[in-house]
Image: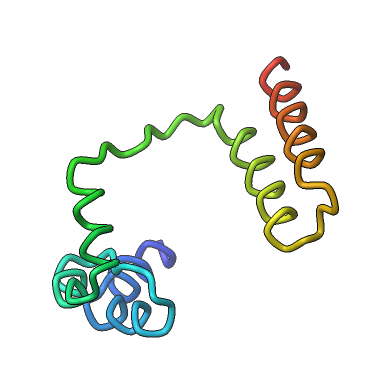
Length: 101
């Protein structure tokens, strides 16, 4: 309940979303804050792309995919993976193994 309260009544407010945009350069999720940020052409384009988007379904089985994918991406982006192609292939093998269980 505390997390829901925090997200709904604090993080989701126009004021906080505007500030998060200011410090993080990410389009706000709050519609009023997003409208104000649309002066930035990147934010405006983000909105245009998302206008006809369909939310990804919440399929619990996908947790195995996102877990391996996120770690592999972080390894590649941070340079921790010395061979990005090899790391990506390892990720794919890990996902296939998790799915086949």
